[in-house]
Image 1 (cartoon, rainbow, N blue to C red):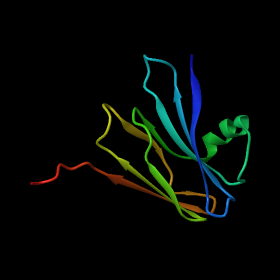
Image 2: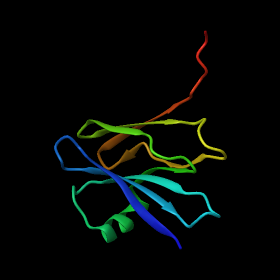
Image 3: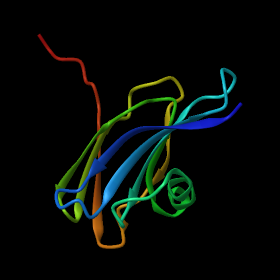
Image 4: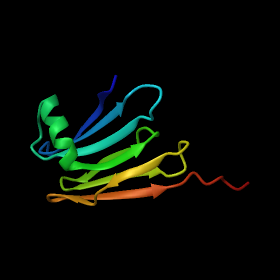
Length: 115
């Protein structure tokens, strides 16, 4: 059975916008997906979140979990993710702007440290 779980809710510094982080999955035979999306009204119910997710989703990845995401200003978001995590893990969606909010998605790697 498929389902979605709200994992985190991160309000902007002034509380006017919210980043929602969801995990969705359909059981052991399919990989989970992780979604970040932006809500610009500040509050909404679960059904409204599901409806808005398609329009305001700014990052989606298959098979890997949470990434560092934070508000840099009331109109700026920074999301960092490691592209080397997870077997067959890949990014399905990226957006750099939703309405007046700039989204900076930074790809990092876990390079081995030299000794």
